[in-house]
Length: 110
Image (tube, rainbow, N blue to C red; front, side):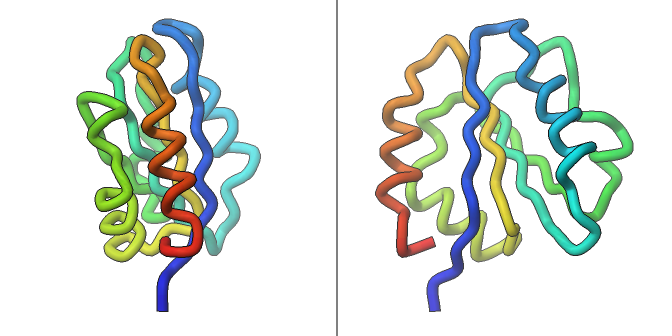
């Protein structure tokens, strides 16, 4: 049976606070019995907080570009990590169209 999860894309240009937003968002929304996979497509000045990095409920995977996250990568990540939701920190310099298409194309098969 195919696994499903929620995918949330956080986008914006460099230094617009995407990682800071993710830190604050998880602080407010992460529940005790939830697992979250963060897929980061850029490395900025701010990092995911240490307490989140060391939390067993949070998995962080880094990618060089938005294009690296395709349907196959999404399916593999969901099957391996079994997250309840995925947060993708999109690279603000690159287009997110393909990323959105890959997430949309995975509906019903994740």
